[in-house]
Amino acid sequence: MANTTNEVQVSATAKYVRMAPRKVRMVVDQIRGKQVERALETLQFTNRAAAEPVAKTLQSAVANAENNNGLRAQNLYVKAAYVDEGPTLKRIRPRAKGSASRINKRTSHITVIVAPRKEA
Image (cartoon, rainbow, N blue to C red; front, side):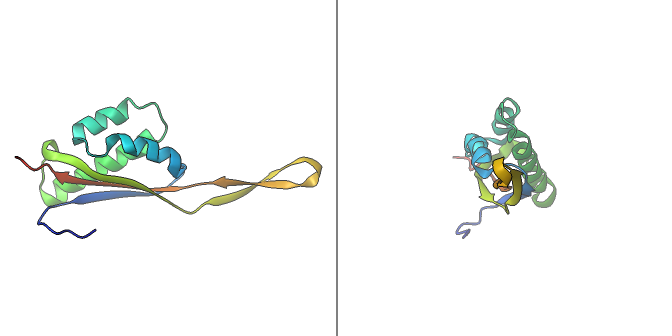
């Protein structure tokens, strides 16, 4: 990402999360653009398994911002959040008459970018 202004962005990435990217994207779409506290509340009450790794990644990004850049968590918002597809684990399931079918166990790379909110 090209950083045209002198805006501080802090990111965190969770790699090889054993969940399908399509399912994780449904959760990530809910927090994009929100204030960090609101996003964590949303994830806490989201009834999906993907909410836990997304919340951990968001908390990691906030911790990185506080410890490495000296930013305050109250001023941060989720600037960007996206899910990339990781490697797929290919497994075989026995089927009728000695045949087999493939099971794809998909993985995800979750990235969350937080930035301080601009005061108007």
